[in-house]
Length: 387
View 1 (cartoon, rainbow, N blue to C red):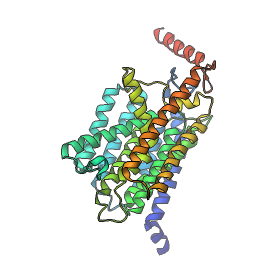
View 2 (cartoon, one colour):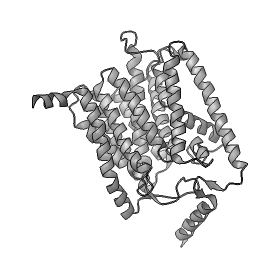
View 3 (tube, rainbow, N blue to C red):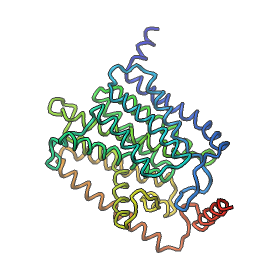
View 4 (spheres, rainbow, N blue to C red):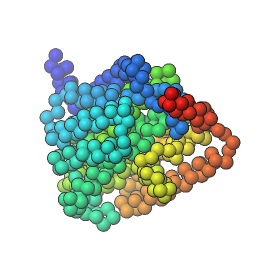
């Protein structure tokens, strides 16, 4: 009996079991959510820019939220700290924000204000601020109020980056799995077991979600509920890891490359968001106005499946991360910044040439969905509304 008690007190066992429990809860709860969504007509609307052709439940974030927190809270985490308490409070705020937006649709301004308020709750009360860039770009110490603004900007950018990435099946979920496992492993290496458990719990819930997100018969989307939760937690992990490394001079496990590493883990959503904001601002459009100019939309418009597009894009993110560790001993932080900027230019050029290829063909389909059919569906909805 003592052996079993000792096993359950083992931190590595707790982390692995948290992932498995979270996965199980997610897989078991999503069919229930799908049935309720169909009964109550809580489905994703089909729009001209959509990547689906059938009404699909959009409350997968409910399962992600529940599975992540249940699998985390089953353990005693005496060293979790006040920051995680505040992060959970923020998750609850964003959960209800996402639910309301998925069902009733909120304006972008209202969503942005609540995201800022939730982020500030953690940043100010938890004093979780990026106060130094470790000499990166010549920046060392950042004044208090500027650090609050800067850290809030990072939270909002990453939250919305995940939201914007959720445009095709599996992409946001797969990026979330990869990033949470990366951050969880980094926290485990630093013996921050509470953070590692939370990160692997998120990974498990997303793996369970992907089982249905890629399903043909029982498909579900994570919706704004899911993207807000995933985006916030990844922002939390990224900022926490950067803040921890401020003590790199006194701990051999830490380094002065934390901002670069956190950026490379999330390089795909960051590249996508930055490119889309530049395009929309140049076109004098709202940065929050949706369209099909994202690279993942452009890729599937070439006739590539959602799963293949996800594999290519996440694979590229993973290769870049592996290359970073390979070349890390020979490259300086500044050289990595220049290299990343160059790769962003390549990313933009790739998206441009692929989009031109679509315009120059006579194909009228976005993946399997006929463009004409989309227009007919939108018109039918308008007519039904007017009647």
